[in-house]
Length: 86
Image 1 (cartoon, rainbow, N blue to C red):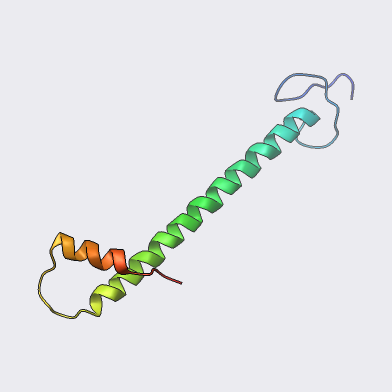
Image 2: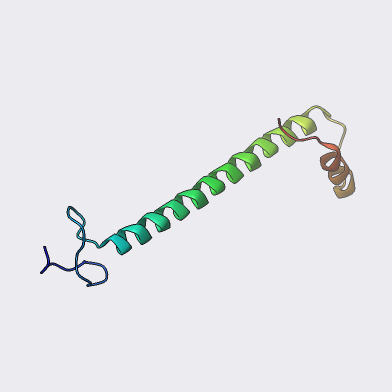
């Protein structure tokens, strides 16, 4: 094992198994994967929140029925007074 080197950084290999990475490179890879997973979960939660709010606002506006067109200010007021999805 002493003659083998890490496939990522080229330093002496201090672990066994696959992939042939040293402990430092394995730890960095694990930190990077954890950070990417956290970012992905945050993005998914944000998208779910946006979808829930979109659905909620659609329900709020459909409850007004056919009262004609809304101006931008009226729409802004309705949105500002919505409590949001729960």
